[in-house]
Image 1 (cartoon, one colour):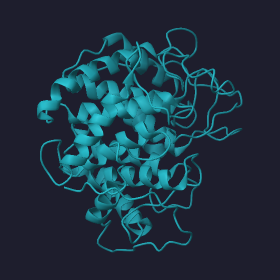
Image 2 (tube, rainbow, N blue to C red):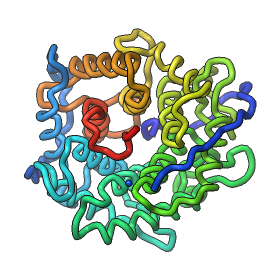
Image 3 (cartoon, one colour):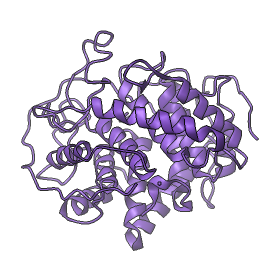
Length: 385
């Protein structure tokens, strides 16, 4: 989703030369309130706290936005449900225990019920043009639940394995986009409804699928080695030779999320670097240059950071894996900034840059902010070093 933004045509630019990537194989592991959706009021107060973000209030606010069907949001419900479920898991609750166990179980059932069709992708009528983001975030959520879901684990096992197959079928396998993912499931499903969307690779879609595959493989599910190798090679091609950041699309020669932009952005660079970690690459020139690019945006910064919460969600993963003084410095800085941005009712507000309704944007940003703040607690297998 970088995050659920509109597509478009970019400018031609010089791309990095193909670099070798040594791909490391991955090892195969009681709030039930339903609050009515309300439009956010302009000028809502921000809860400034020198002690950091108010986590309990944020969790309670997020759990209270779960719908009667077990999902979150109005549009792109699978994506919002996947990320909201991950936020509750990150707090320490599981499908079987903890204050948000019931919320997590309901979210699992919602996602599994959305696995439809011969391809077994996760699909919902509320999904917009980016069906692949919805599928990937839903699949990632299920992989983080597996093994802790008790009676639901058998259903999870089937859903995850079929979801992996759907992701692998959606990967480009020829041309400049080889190894990447576009907006559409199976590289074509949904094109008739969104004929003006570009049909080649895009960095944030690829990131969403690689993390889902990594989560599945870590949980012990079969993921084809070739799919991961192609994805890794694709990401190497997306490194911007001049800056060390990551380009938005390799196949379409588009460097930036912004139309006409000729430099990478913080958001795409953070996401790309995080996925190098997901592929087992924790050190080396590519990772170091990505981190150096990110560190120019250390909070607080006056530099423009489109897709703020999306970018920092992945940046936190990178710096958590990095650890040491650099990692601690970054995580302390972003938590301080998030404390300043948090509202009195616990939520983080909407992002004017995305295409979601304000209420949905606030849900997604709150889910991302919570995962940033909770990453060091180590409850999500995805973030294990």
